Image (cartoon, rainbow, N blue to C red; front, top):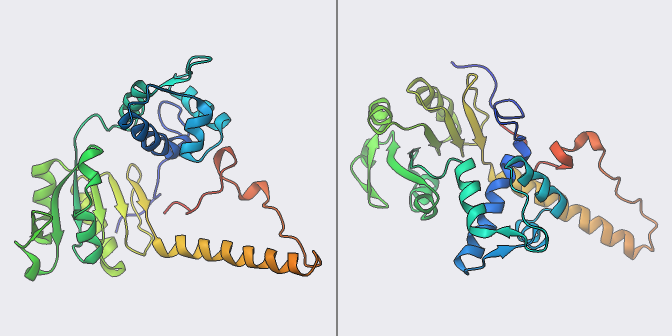
Length: 254
């Protein structure tokens, strides 16, 4: 079984912090919406509000890209779309395999946003022989026995795992051994991978638990207000709990 870190160091070769990299898709989404409305330029304040960050952080993030905007004019929307897309590697086609075609895997296969963002679903793979050959989103499901050949033939470097937790590590090991170096994990488990392999974990239950925490806290604050402020105030977060640039990560990396 593969062992090692589950993500790369905090900065990349060009010196762009991971916290900035994580915000680039937010900027791109906001900029794409502006582009679709034929908006030529946007101020840092307007773009920051659309992306859900503060303008000072946005300007700092863009400085890593060498983009500083024009005083009194703002940022050129189309150029920033191109610049961020290039930085994220979205100016080329990325073949992706989805392993595990249950309800979640099928929903991912039917997601229309992949193609418009530079990702092509090259194959759908599942261990159930009953699914082999059946089309999902117009793509016939292939059996896991052919996983290594599929990855080689389609030159796949990104794998999506949507299997049950018990099968996820074995699938991960096979993906890595076949040459996949980036994995998006939807299985409710932590994967172990060697150095040089990036893993992003998506856990909906964790997100819901965090929302439940905030709901409980808001209820406590409302109760305190109803008691005339006698209840203890919520203790502020310590700086040590914050991520890069003062961010508090919603989900800890896998």
